[in-house]
Length: 379
Ligand SMILES: *Cc1c(COP(=O)(O)O)cnc(C)c1O
Image (cartoon, rainbow, N blue to C red; front, side):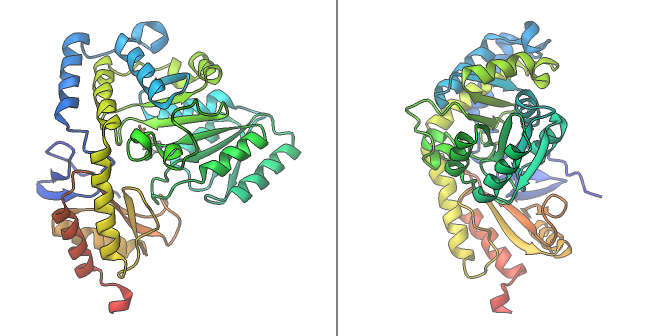
């Protein structure tokens, strides 16, 4: 049974949870925007102006000016033709896959994709082929296999940054494959947007796959979530006009659900401004990552990652849970991630850093890990 912790204070690096004070290393609020004064003000002002509930789906009368403004602002930021808003990332993924492929089509997916992408592929009714994690050669083998069996429309599906490992997909190679084999490339960059890339434009920008002065390639569709670095809630799909219009007309998670509150769109517009001007925040989490990685280099166990997701691989699930509990007893909140969320024997602490962690907070985590889990070399 998993315990359900209750937080008594807002999201942040210092929180009271289940009656105890913690420094938290577990949220996806990488830039510290979930409780940022400008975002809070925007939500409050938005509620005064627009009320609370949207009251209807987007295509009925639940699409308000702030929704429209946010879709345009996100599209302009990413230099795409269109952007569509969703209430959650989970729903955006159901929409993008189910809207572009169905029975008779094929999804070619990374083995370590987020659960919402796995569910989206299964629900779509398309045939699902999986390729070895971040392996373009194996992806190409699956594309060839798909072509031989007359695979209908093809869609390559990947996380931009993998949520439990913190590593990034080889997006240039995957885009080249999409172009060569006439497939869509859908990149779910839930953990990349805001975090890195020019002006926070995500993993494609960080890797130089898209030039943010030009429109991205037609074959590319990006999914972003607003509940992580943006610090608000919801998600978007961004891409060329033609596929995005198909999704607006056909995607069931767009049509058959109430639009998110318009005030939330006002708040997200404020966080988008902070993200665009967020180089100092991005430098701050990078400094924390550098501090953690250099201090724990000799200790070992940190998985290869250049993102705020810094998993410490332990292996056995029971040892991982025991270490997380011991850290909790010292006031450090770091979640233990174990199978089935990750593959067998790869249980880990999923440490996430935020721009708001001070060097002292990171040092406390380093010292406590070294004390509680001495490296094998030191034993
Ligand atoms: C969190 C996450 C989602 C789901 O987004 P929500 O807005 O929380 O529903 C989708 N994809 C990835 C890769 C995620 O990490």
